[in-house]
Image (cartoon, rainbow, N blue to C red; front, side, top):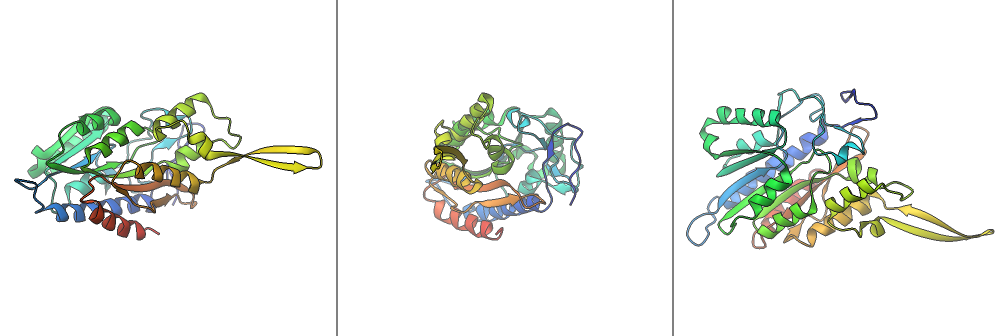
Length: 309
């Protein structure tokens, strides 16, 4: 597989192909199992109303050649909406997969910052005309919209939320808001190799703007002490100190443990999504929102993630 070359100097293309297909297969499998499990599950008076929320919905499609040809460099990851050329409408993306899920959801909320992509999403109402009234397209910042949605009464509602950011746009306060509903199951792509690891310089000297972005993503400033250690060694010439950076495995465990502190349950072994050079790009993390439903949710998620290994 060859990635489309970017005209932007110093940029690195986001690889697609097998890993993008893999994450969407996992999502599609979970959605089918989820809606089946909740189809006849009652609340006090009536069944739960079910929603699917896609926070970076794109156009509803993905490109066959490089699937998601979005462009990054460490600097770009700090910006809210940097993307490469619009993908050709060839393969189903997460939005269309959700709309094709049977049994279906009662509501579909698609969030996109780009007006152009929102226009593409609007076309789904024509394509899926029977679901048109259930499709809610929201233009703007994903963090703002998700926090607004999560602030509502969730006692008679359940949802699956897919967070597939272009970079490091997701904020920890948004993840906390999702957990507080105790009603939303979360699938999240954590930018391990393509984001966090790149910002953690080998020397430990991290620009202030990068530190702020990492603070927002991880929800704390204590990450530095977790990701860097100072090794003291004795030599013939005296003591010597060396800064040692954490491995990507350590970084991934740290974030997954953070999820476990606020959700009812998390998949202990997230999926690892790699590019064509076999380098880790993302972790596909799962967190169950409702304590009573977490056992079955985790069982389904763990089965699907195991298939990735």
